[in-house]
Image: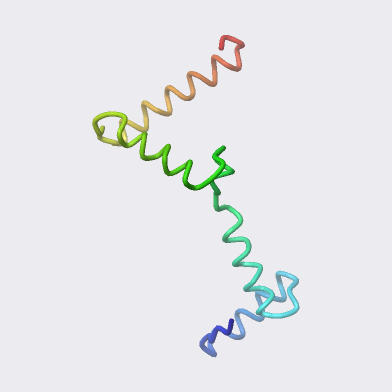
Amino acid sequence: MTITLPDELREPLERKARAAGCATVAEYLCRLVEEDTEGELTPADLGFASAEQLEAKLEAALDSGPPIPVTPAFWDEHQRRVNERLAKRAAGCE
């Protein structure tokens, strides 16, 4: 693949490549792309054998009941419940 960048990016990218320990700008850009994609989750990361299995679980969740409003208050309550469960688990109550 060939990517053409504006000339004004050449010097800053060469500087950043050297600072990152890369021999070339191409190597530096490849490293950036790899780092960007490292955090992406796969169905297996979430405990599913396939994308189809994950999709089926998501569809079932959508069909599991009426929609609820997801507001800041919802997230606050959700965080409170998670913290409560973690505290109980840490205390050996669960």
